[in-house]
Length: 446
Ligand code: S3P
Image (cartoon, rainbow, N blue to C red; front, side):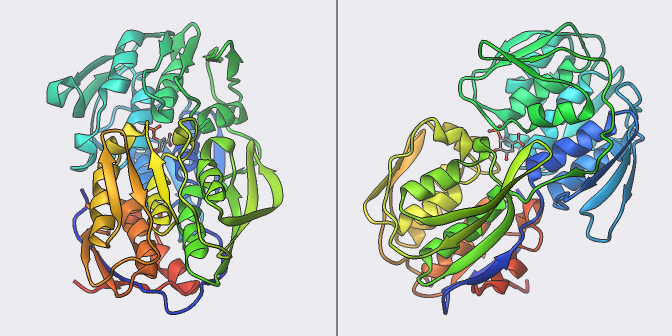
């Protein structure tokens, strides 16, 4: 967990107004640099997320001999000189994925194909997160892996080499697991086929074809027939703004009376769009305009307004993977809605950057919310306003910290949010953007 960083937040003094472009999509930023690093040729990427998570991915490739040139000071544009599928060099140090599950798990897929051994670790939070879900399929494909914590945890050492394609039926609905296996499949003899219990975000499947590697579908299986190379795309690879970051401001604008906020160039891929479906079902006023495509990804502007009180809903099981990262902020919306909000089938939330069911329930209860917790979800009875004058702990989880900063806008007094520094992993500039629309939030000097 990333310790430190205290936010002083709320309450909002007036309605929120403004136009925001949140930073680039985290999932796509990781994938773009990974694919570019093992492609032949030079890939130019724009809209990259310069958060700590994605920078960890970029610097891992630099450790393995890939040359990355940053094209601006903000690190949102870069040029990657690809090493080719077989051109990575053995790293001269332990690879550190920091706080990022996506970096660790997808990277393992690529490392499984390398003819050298590497050791991968992460921060305290990542070292608690389950890795067996990717270790097992990679072993079946032929990788040799020794992991800590009874074989389920980082740090782990992986010796890759000659892999064979497998048919893999994942027990968890996880895009990280699916993507890990597909990336390893690039190096395998024969086809790799993955089936998931529920559809998850498909950025890997949409992006690989831009690098000349088709991904097919047959009878519910995702099929990768390895072409033996990735080729850098001729056009600049542009990454849309991250819907997971936009969701914080969309909820803020739907709960603070009189607000209207426009969010531009937001990814609306259906596998990432569960938050909009759930929030709309709760009665939120969200309007899309200017729908267009960026590469293979659908994008739109989203206007969020506060016109009526939200109402609690029962979240459909199918919507869970499509909103998996947005539940912290959806719990905030639910705490201020009429009636009951119910979520089940979401035990994956317990193995994210923190146990997001327990941590969010604890923080929102401290603000007066009425919450019943289950192993796989929770139930929230909303109330008109939350209690301020309290201190809550974000437990080093970026999305908890940002969600609580939004919750505090509707509190009756300011709230202190401790251990919020991890916001920098996914949304550098969150506080400045929040202030620009009128949210009452600032960092406390420590
Ligand atoms: C991600 C997939 C999700 C999500 C994470 C990013 C990805 O994890 O929570 O923030 O980029 O593939 P799971 O697929 O493990 O649920």
